[in-house]
Amino acid sequence: MSSKLIVISILLGLIVFQAFRISTDAGAFVEIKPVDYGRCEKLYGPPGSEDINVDRINRVAFISSGNGREAFESYRSGKPGQVADGDIWVLDLSVADSLPRPLKVDAGSKFHPHGIDLLTLPSGARELYVVNHPARDQHEILIFTVGANHGLTLKRRIHYPELISPNDIKAIDTDRFL
Image (cartoon, rainbow, N blue to C red; front, side):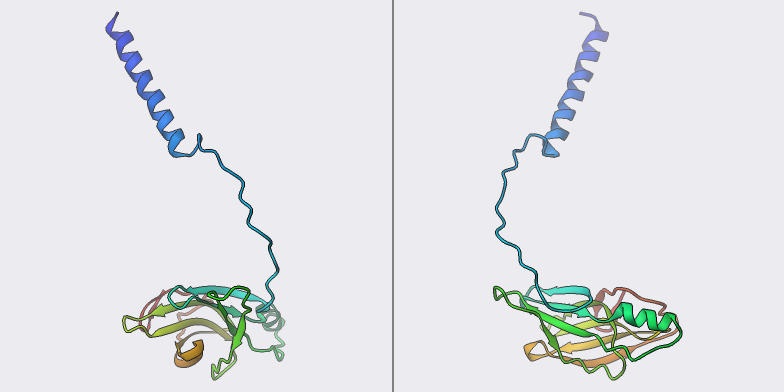
């Protein structure tokens, strides 16, 4: 047998082996069995839900909601009307069939929440960071301490000219966010 044929055979064998390995890793030979997920039901709750953040330790979900489209349209028209404030809702994930409930939020100004993020501090305390749009060209970050029964107390309001139309937020540590 010539050395060219041996080299070609080895290369072909390596190619077939790699193709088989890649196909196996990609799940080409895995049989997927149908799963019955049960019934689905519509969950009634926050109108205009904007963002959801899950507290895995306390097994609740915080949901920001509001009349964002209505507020945007009133700002865009140049005739800001009386758009109702938004809310932060909480959903207990540890109880089957629980319904979300609105939290009483005192933001000290118009409250149109957008993106949210929950920060759990080393002490176990929790802070909820909320992007708020109180007016057409006003944007701010509200930091709430999360208390008993997931109640929210305004801790700090952050706004500065470089904060232009934020949508979402990621808390890093106390008073630091992206």
